Length: 149
Image (tube, rainbow, N blue to C red; front, side, top):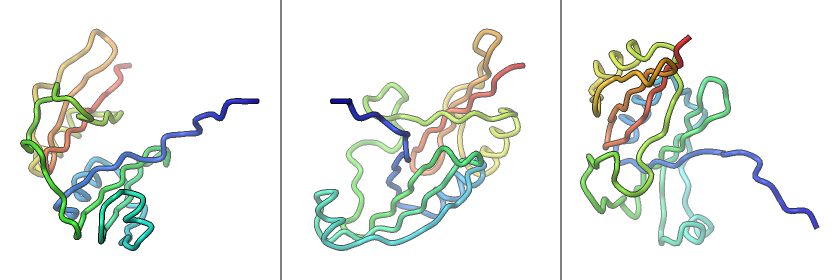
């Protein structure tokens, strides 16, 4: 009997309170809005093991169409925060997503102008990459990677 195989990563979920700010952040990064909808009902409740769920979902995709982020704003029940908004990068759990860019300085400058903050510094890793971590709305961290020619 053959073993089933992983086909692809479909998307990463990020729960947010300010859906418009999160969408604006990812649009500024270069993501495209693929669609937005509201979900609710018994099947949603059963799927995520919560009661009376009503949430707005925005699906954002990378320009190449392969990567997606799902931004969810819970109306009921309200989203909860179990720790500080600005956690350290070494905090247990999912901390960041890494995005490849062609001009890290331009992307960092653009995001900083829109209220994001640099977590540390833009650094060069050997002669292969320039890297930066940016903190966006609600503490979302994205890594930026520019491959050196």
